[in-house]
Length: 62
Image (cartoon, rainbow, N blue to C red; front, side, top):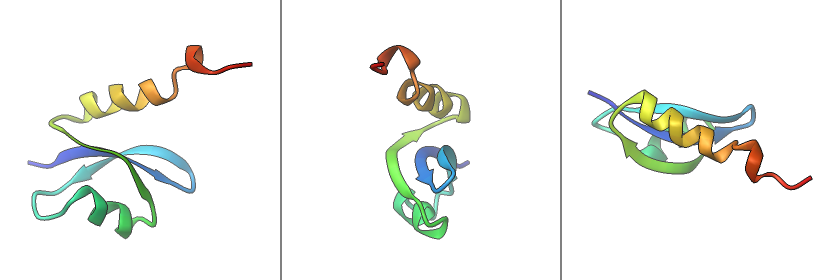
């Protein structure tokens, strides 16, 4: 079963599945991305919740 990490591509941050044979860095490299949070998160939902915390509008200054 894959685990999940948060990566950032040119399009923005996203949740990426990490196969057991690869690291978060390997998957990011394959997608020309950088690792934001390597996790590993056991489910997509948990990784997505963490991703939303990075985009919390209440944390932004006007």
